[in-house]
Length: 110
Image (cartoon, rainbow, N blue to C red):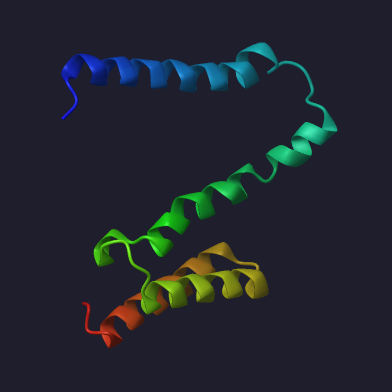
């Protein structure tokens, strides 16, 4: 267990780092137009965050002790294919959730 002093030092440093990253864009260069190359790369930030959050939950799920399982892989595949074909994030997420729930029910894990 981490002692309280170290914990608060980490929390404060992470908070300052987070503030600093946001301040660079809003405080220092917020009143100037950004270069086209930077805007082009910033468009993909939101698209990269969701897979970065979800991928570890699919590949190393805590529910299975960190081993791959068929329902989660099938749900990820259905979500990717539905998102690519339908171009609708909400429908893709819903189809993936239905696939995961159905796969877990078929495997007797619910």
